[in-house]
Image (cartoon, rainbow, N blue to C red; front, side):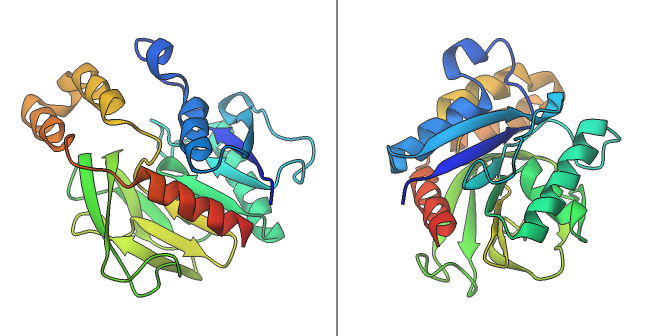
Length: 235
């Protein structure tokens, strides 16, 4: 099945890094096409109010991460939240990452807030639950790059946890057969995160940055998530 995925871009890459790594839709295109070269994408800059003229002009949607919080009083965040509600009502396939993961919970009846654990940075590992997808086994572990301090505290009604960790109980979730979310970043490369951490050293602190950078040599499961997401969309 040929897929066209609409990427709802909720931020911009820092200008120091964009020339080398591209914008967030570019990162997702690389991730998805590595799993299936036939996948097409369309970009919608939702921070500027760009949306499809017809909700069905693509097969599924993907929400990127963002430096913003889902509870920030920003018109574009409210508009994106309303679009998520429309997608949910239509049972349109949606994959939501980090900010998107939090927004799904926030606008569909759950709660997102700052974590008591502070920032989650670098390579983080989660354990799959008994509700995990048929393509994954309960008890298995997946590793992804993380960069967040907000996280989902209460799931939206009907949502199940597919994977969690000690510091982030809701790493991967599923709502019905149409919404798949991930708190961490399968689109990030270790090189990108290393450069980003250095740029944010004043905000994050030297110790946190050093510890996160030390973790970057660990293997990642980005490709496994891409395959899982595409399988989810096609089901």
